[in-house]
Image (tube, rainbow, N blue to C red; front, side, top):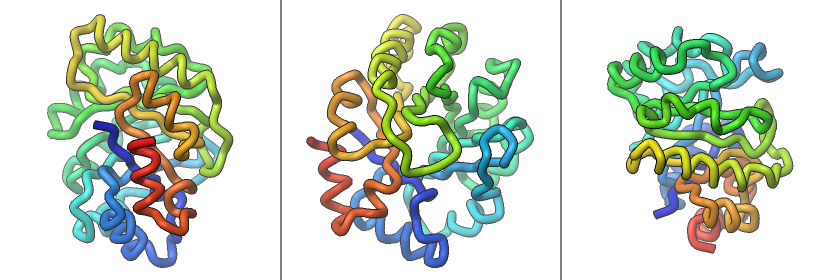
Length: 216
C-alpha cells in the first residue's frame, strides 16, 4: 500500500499544532520533518526542540530527514524523542554502515537519502541493512520545487538493489515535487512512500489530495 508523508516544511509555522492535526485527520500516514543546518543545504528549519514539542500532539510516525553535515550527533536525541525513521544523506557520511547500525541500535529505523546527482549504486554495500531509501526528486533545501524526472529511473534502480540484497521490508520514499500527477510514474516505478509538501498543505481539500496521491 502506498503511504503519504506530508512535509512539515510546507505547513503554516504559526499554527503548527493545528496543521499537524489537520493532516492527521486528512489521512496522512507519516509526518515528514526536514531538519536542515544551513550548511549541507542553504536553509535552516527545525531542530530537536521543535520535534520534541510536537511529538505529544500527534500519533503519526515521525519520518525525520536530516539534511545536515553531522547526522551522527543527533541520533541519541531523536531516539529519545520517539522518532520512527531517521534518514541521513549518503553525501555527508564516510562510514554509512557504522551510522546505520548506530541508528538501529537506538531503536529507530535507518534510512539513507540520495541527492539527484548521487548514484543508487553507492548504497550497494548497505542495501541489506536499510529500512528506507529516500530518493530526492529535487535538490534538497527548499519546498515547492519542480520534480526531476530522472528520479523515476532511480526508484527502479533502488528497488532492484533491495531485491538483489534480499531486503523485502525496506521502503522506497521519494521527496520533491510530488503531487497527484507526478506520483503516478513514481508509484509505477516501485516507490512505496511519497513525500508531498505544498501539494497537500496548499490543497483546498487536503484529504482529497492525499487520497489522489495514494490512489491515482
